[in-house]
Image (cartoon, rainbow, N blue to C red; front, side, top):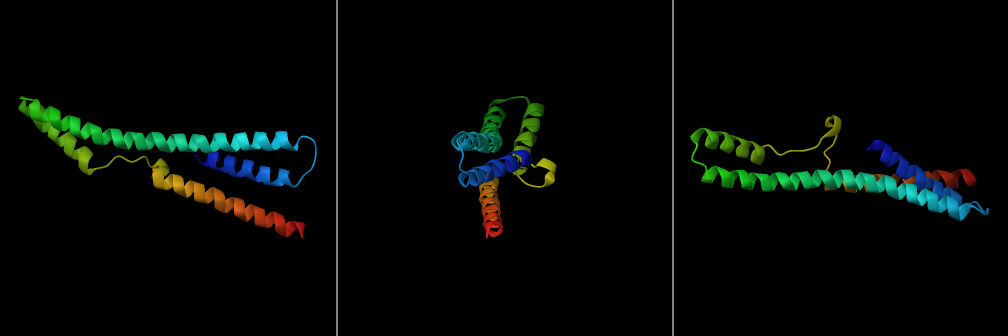
Amino acid sequence: MGCYFITCINELHQIYTNLNIHHENVILEISMNLQLAFIAFFKTVLIIWSCCRVYKQVDILISLIHDINNKSFNFNLNDQLRWFSMHLRYEKIFYRPCKLFTLDIKFLGKVMLGIVSYLLILIQFDRATET
């Protein structure tokens, strides 16, 4: 995840630096950098989107387990299904890599904000070194 973030920032910064350089292959380099940045960002979005899909599927699973629990006549199975349903309902499933952050839509917004912030800092440093 972090490598996609760094790749995206690096490629977007390369686009910015190539805009100031005038040679014959600049359009090709800019398009390649833009493609690599898009691929890195798209991989990040896919990871987060798949985690959000799992969260939604768990909600559907809870209702299915509840329906099965109501239609079953086996008391031992009913108890186990009730326990599993309550466990899923009250202890939400989250993907937390290294227990640092939770992968969800809010995290995607934070990634986009981080990319923009780092790009602004890099652009400011480039302009400061030019003068």
